[in-house]
Amino acid sequence: MSLRYALLGMLAYEPSSGYELKKMFEGELGEYAWHAPHTRIYPELARLADEGLIEVAEEGARGRRTYAATEAGRAELRRWLFTPLEEGRARNVHVLRLFLLSALEPEDTRRLLRSYADDSEHEADKLAAVAADLDAETPAGERPPFGRMAAEFGLRMHRARRDWARWALERMG
Amino acid sequence: MSLRYALLGMLAYEPSSGYELKKMFEGELGEYAWHAPHTRIYPELARLADEGLIEVAEEGARGRRTYAATEAGRAELRRWLFTPLEEGRARNVHVLRLFLLSALEPEDTRRLLRSYADDSEHEADKLAAVAADLDAETPAGERPPFGRMAAEFGLRMHRARRDWARWALERMG
DNA sequence: GTGGTCATGTAAGAAGTTACATGATTCT
DNA sequence: AGAATCATGTAACTTCTTACATGACCAC
Image (cartoon, rainbow over all chains, first blue to last red; front, side, top):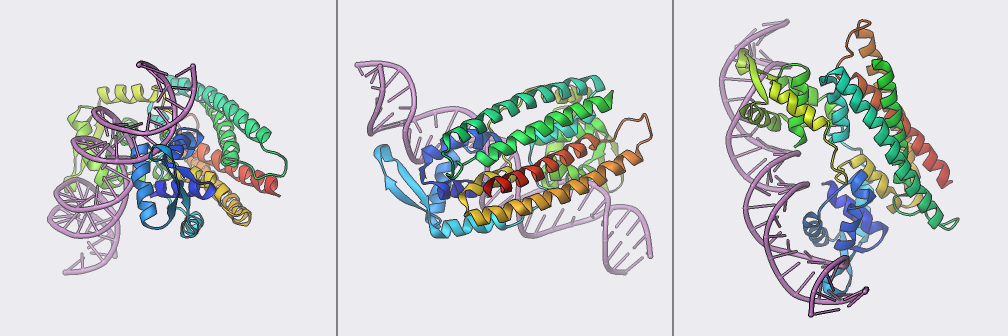
């Protein structure tokens, strides 16, 4: 059920076509938050439009349809964002791997921890660059772009992960 | 495909029945890493057994079957843990919400950020207690229990999330 | 003996993946 | 004219969710 809110949120931020939404899922959004292929996007857009949560704002070349969130859609998005998430239903491969480290031989665990530390540092650097770019593109006083806060979040998560891996290595001796 | 590795990893750590695995998914594992209901667990165990990655180690009362990872299973787990994850396929509702904050009115965004900061602090406290308990139960020099590293990870993630929310609030003014 | 937990299962439907497909426009 | 990208779609299959179901054991 989250896909619909991902779409609704993006359309509430700014009207887009299915194709543009697909491109966003291929960027940071899909890497850190939520991914969907176009074969899921288009049917879900049709359903959202059926339910009156979004509407076709413009039709362009090559059958392009630009959708925008309706007032009902914005209200529904807001309602969802303020609803506490159900707990205990994680689906995070990265964290799963951390749990499973305990099942390996210590030397394997150390190898993985070292690569986690390195990867996280690398990812943090990438996101720091993304954040800096977004800041540079934003005139002072203007609304920060979609994803600026999330980029900062990813940056901090990766640094925390790096520090955790170092802590774990030290603790293992 | 991750469910099978979750099961394989738990069984490589220690032999368990489907029912015990289900209980683990209801605890920290399911809350932070990976969740599955029993209706997915049992069929997947059957498939893993079919493929020779796990085997029935013991049959008990009430039809209970205790499974254990085979050598082939351990090798497959290890192979998977050392395979780099495909990027760009996140499915994380929490992070999705952060992205969508940009679509709300500033006052709504502030309200959510404040509640994120509070929730994270609360969760971090909970995990700090879990970690302390696990440490207290572990005799010096012994292998730390399954999930100890993950508890530390969760703790650090929640603190980073709390700090991020405070940063975002400050930045919004 | 009966209420709770243990222990596993089936089945229908929704969501997600993967392969295949097609036509329109733009760029060079 | 041909290649690349834009833009959307169908269909088969797998995975996940939710509702329903059943019997065995244990404690009181």
